[in-house]
Image (cartoon, rainbow, N blue to C red; front, side, top):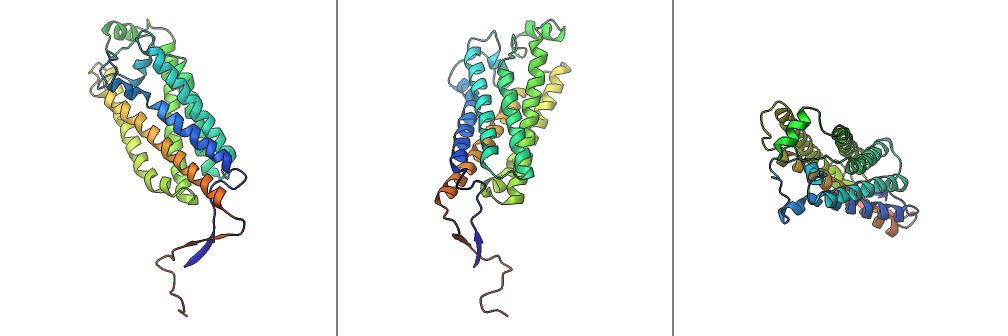
Length: 259
């Protein structure tokens, strides 16, 4: 057996902040998946073809609801990321990842304030106006804020996964992070290919499916991070100064009594 000190990412002084960060991030992840309501509420949009952001378009009957959930999601994730920065040890990869997550939250909140005026994938008139440049400037601004949000999310997933594997304080994230990151990169490539096809006039393919998978994976990752922070907070509360933790010996450790 090998003995090592307990080293959660949060210590006893910052345990409550880690708990607060976990709650904020979990609620943010839930709000970010509000689009699943389209499975039980008729929105008038085809989830296989339509952008997720079209649910929040200004001319959609439930646009106000989805703009509100996007605003809440972004604000909660931003607050959770900043709170986590104050709660955990500011190692380089961790700090960079949480900063990227804060960017994602801020851009998502901004995105909700810059809605599309109409739904181009389901409204031919809207699509023609968008192609001709006759839509409000918010369409361009929305594209910029959406791009910033997704870049922040991708950076956060990559950086926090590296942090978990390098520092060893988030074992669940170290184990599940790599497959989630690979799936997110694949979903992003799928979405970008579909956007290129749409721009070239070749149809939407399954644009809605690709983008929904993209945002769902981000929400799952944020929820997983919340779980890791909650575990840190529990470990910080239960830790006693100077109390060691006992971990199984590594396979290469010599047996007791070996020379």
